[in-house]
Length: 215
Image 1: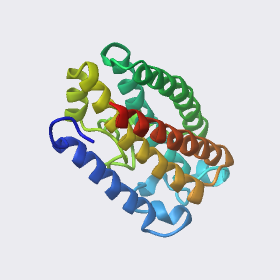
Image 2: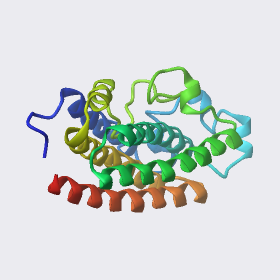
Image 3: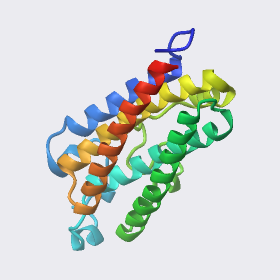
């Protein structure tokens, strides 16, 4: 599926890191306990009076919103590259739809974090894809800086194939995070959005695979 060369080292690391993060997310059990290895103790509901007073969300919901915001931001960045670099009209159309769907979702999840009194991922000051409680853990499906630089340098048919391969892997990470939220999250709003993301991105993966097979 790759263009005239093996998978980039950065892309392989991104997929591996994503898988490792999901093991940490799901290996510790059900409910809030599943996040024990990822969420800092000071922010847990057991130690924060404000969290004790508001039981409508959990640490799982906060982690989902933080991770998915950073994940969506990178997808939007990739989609914006397609505006000037893609050759295929189908790839450009797909990228535009991804951007149109995910920007409002970023705004929605950012609003939740503000409502919950939780800092966003970007306000944590811990680097790309990182947030308070996430230090040392990758966001599933995220591309590395090297992958993004390679995508930015590509044009035409080369860009189209690279974009589709990377976005398929990227969507895979979002689907895994969405499944985790639906299984372990507390607030119906976040679980409903996770279901929407899973269904939409699974359909887009199928669409991208068909496009990739034709290029």
